[in-house]
Length: 345
Ligand code: ATP
Ligand code: MG
Ligand code: FE
Image 1: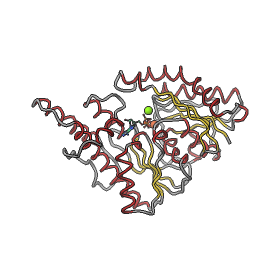
Image 2 (image 1 turned 90 degrees about the vertical axis):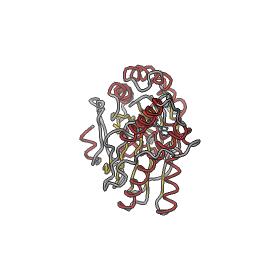
Image 3 (image 1 turned 30 degrees about the vertical axis):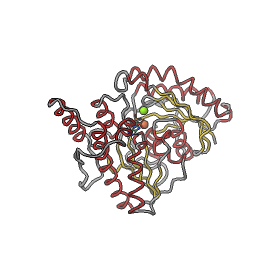
Image 4 (image 1 turned 120 degrees about the vertical axis):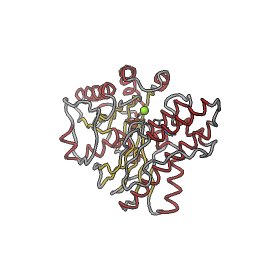
């Protein structure tokens, strides 16, 4: 089974060929970081234009690298939400055109399900499991009773974890996206500022990062007014320590409560070295029987291969879209079962 998968929800245009949901034959990623950097974030119009320019080139490159022809393909898959509507539409249109031209089934994929299934490219998933989704737009703890079934048990009340990294990075004059740079800076500093750990003790699995962001910004601005310059590495380390503390504490509580034996971490922020190390430590110390699965760095950010991996599951559950498939910018997957996914596509 060979799936050609398209991803264009935000600022990466990516096309991949995935075999049997677990083997990457190609995964071409065209990032727009250089043009979005100038604006300090993703500008939707700029993103759409890039996708238009890149999508055909990426598809041809993905087919060539995988060394397959359209006749070899089983299906075409595409991210149809959540994301920027104009960006999503480019991938959806391209995938529809190829599926139609070659009479291939079209499989609609939720971008966040894609992030989770990036872990399937590492090893088989065993259910029930918990997935921690930490990305530019989401911070969610998802319970999966079975393959393709998603129930959000915790969510952010305001900013997503990645968004907080990027906003704090702007205050430190770090180029967008700042996550990796803060991660690097944090390694040279220590947690001296002791920023708040919002909702860490609350009896739920929700998160809030806007208070942390404000505390950070106030600390920097107050120092500036006193003509003082604070140690950037310590600021980064303190911010990151707060994020990690809250995320790890609440996720580990959910792991124990739900009694799962696998924990998947996914999304761009899953690339964070401090977060990965801390989970490894906590699990080894307290729940050594829990299998912690986290994709390699190149599969944490947006890419087509993760969409192909998720599509394998949905394809085999009979999920199909037709020529009417539209972009769904606000797509969620609360209580999404295969039947429900069929209705929505
Ligand atoms: P979503 O998946 O929610 O739609 P998105 O696709 O824009 O949003 P991703 O591409 O999955 O998000 O992740 C990008 C985010 O990951 C950015 O906010 C970026 O700063 C962050 N990030 C990347 N590397 C690191 C790192 N090492 N530490 C912390 N954050 C990181
Ligand atoms: Mg991105
Ligand atoms: Fe993403």
